[in-house]
Length: 522
Image 1 (cartoon, rainbow, N blue to C red):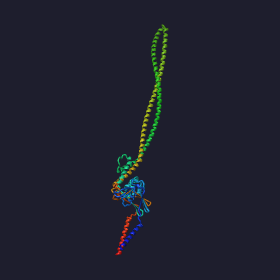
Image 2 (image 1 turned 90 degrees about the vertical axis):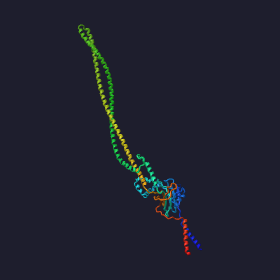
Image 3 (image 1 turned 180 degrees about the horizontal axis):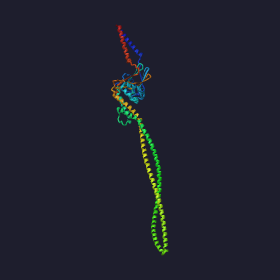
Image 4 (image 1 turned 135 degrees about the vertical axis):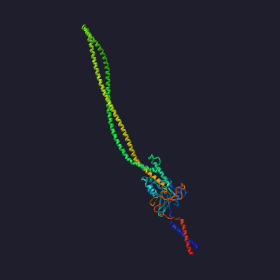
């Protein structure tokens, strides 16, 4: 009877426990995925397996309380182009957890950088020294860091619908960050080195810090250099105008002198032709005169003979006058004729010699004028040559000054860009230098986008916990766990599974009943 009573009591106690469980059943979390092709599950531990597109395996990894088993959202690349992930639902609560795109980064990049610098304060001063362009460059570069494809090792709602994620990643990302910065340094230099041909190798931080003020000094000097060159150019332009006017005047004088010379040359030709004619006439007349002179001489001789004969005859006339007188008359007539011819020829010769003298004088005058005009023309042509040479020199100076001003204007435009690029490059080198000098670990989780309760959060953490394992494929990944919770998340103690609760309640009932029976029997 006693044993039967005990059995009934134990059964009743267990029934009460089961009834209590049935009246408040546990609510399970359900999961749905929006793109199973981009879901890859790791089954956990250092020897785990990778499973792609299996939602059952994914749900197990999210809920098995083993953070090393995880689900990667967007596994094909490290830079998602869409939000891939899952939606978890528990009762009236739901949350969507996805990968992070470049567009998402625009919403939280400033906050992420601020949290990073607050965690790793030695880098705060480096960041504060960055130019606005560099800060913008770094912020714009964040989406390419490969942090938007998170590995979710655990998901849980709290009693109020708050969300807790366990993000699986690297314990120390310093080496990865150093590699990324190194690539960025090389890429940045490759994009700008054509502007610095004198620098044939990747410059050091010290070299860049030296070069920037040198370029700034050049830039500061350019406005003054442009003003000086412009003043010189204005002067040269004035000199060119003056020289051109002088050259135009000389060209006009050359034209006038050339026309005069052409006229004189024509006059010389005409006069020379006339002189040649006169010279021919003189030659002819001279020949005639020579003949006449010979005739005169002959006639004079004859006349002398006749005169002698006349005298002789005159003396004889007294004896015989008739015959001698007739001969004398004949000879006298001939002599008169010859003297008349001599007189005429002498007159003609005198006239011709006078004409020759006049023409020769005129020709000499024309040749003198020609010489003067030719000399003047030569002088003008020399002046023209000098002016043209001077004008060419001035135009060359004008071209050089204009080219110099254009070069300065180009430098004035390009130098600020070069200084800006160098400043950003210096900032990156400064970050690289600070990273090399930083001796501690740098932990940074990947990032998940969480939408729950009508709000959007970006889940990330800089506080890592060693996971005790590494991924089976590379032996490096999954070495750290990062915990993230929505604001106000309520942590709770572990709730036993229903079967465990049932057993515990049964045992408690048995113990309580046994104690009561002992008291009754006692």
